[in-house]
Amino acid sequence: MRWRRRHRIARAYRKGRELTCVLDNTAAIKADDLLLVCTLRNERIRLPYFLKYYRDMGVSHFLFVDNDSDDGSREYLLEQEDVSIWHTAGSYRKSLFGVHWMNWIARKYCHGHWTLTVDVDEFFVFPFCDTRPIPALTDWLDNSGLKSFSAMLVDMYPKGPIDAQPYREGQNPMEIAEWFDSGNYMISVNPVYYNLWIQGGPRARVFFNEDPSHAPSLNKIPLVKWHRSYVYMHSTHMLLPRGLNAVYDQDGGEKAAGALLHTKFLNTFVEKTEEELQRRQHYAGSREYLAYHNRIQDDSELWCNWSEKYINWRQLEILGLMSKGNWA
Image 1: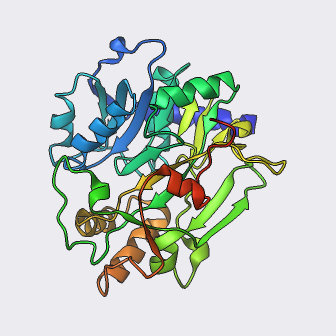
Image 2: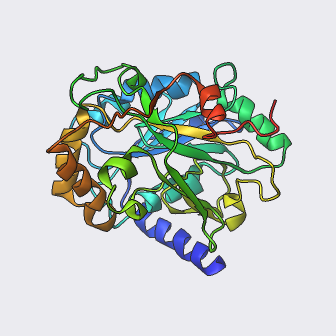
Image 3: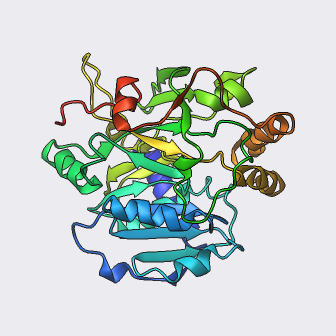
């Protein structure tokens, strides 16, 4: 495991050379600031609400890797005072789907900081997030001696065809994609890295219904008290050292856990799928996007009679999709 971690750090160094800093506001980062790391491509329409959401949640500085956007994303971010940006035209696939770039950024700028690593269509919710910001959670994690915090990815979707209602810039995407699967999840433990492995939800039900074992994984560990010796191994699904992945209670109790509300399925999804099929920069030859493409040609509706309308984090806790553990 030490060799794997050193190899991943070395890869991050090499891939970090592909990044060119186009906006450096990192001198403004304070010792106790909450940071956010994100890789994006062509997400201009989503950025205003994304930034507002996480600013309101207590993020002090955003560290973006822009993978050669041509829709004005980089130009918009250049206007933000709490943002630093690195640009690259490098291969997303050859950077291990952005993992090497994000590891390099985190190693250089996030050491000693609680750091949230998310995509632009992911919105972090956690116990008491309606009344407490993320720094309240990280204070409790510090006092509890914890270095990482998990969040299950919950796919959100609209009722009716995905492209029926256009998404407006600055709009809360959960106003459109307000439904989710309350069950239909498979959970196992990875015996090598000790992380949970979760699959299911609407993507397994609709796009991978004939082979749910190949459905995208939903387990995430997005919030970490970063140390320069840490590395993500595969997206934010698992890290090294392995102890960071032990985010579940093995003695019959419950550890606190959150959720990432995943708002991929808006009207922009169809165009995004076409683009990613052309680029072929995603995992397994973009198998996931090929499944999306094949299905939405016939029917783009994910809603079913068992769909649940999202209300708040307490609803997710009741359904067993997140837990406040012993945080009160």
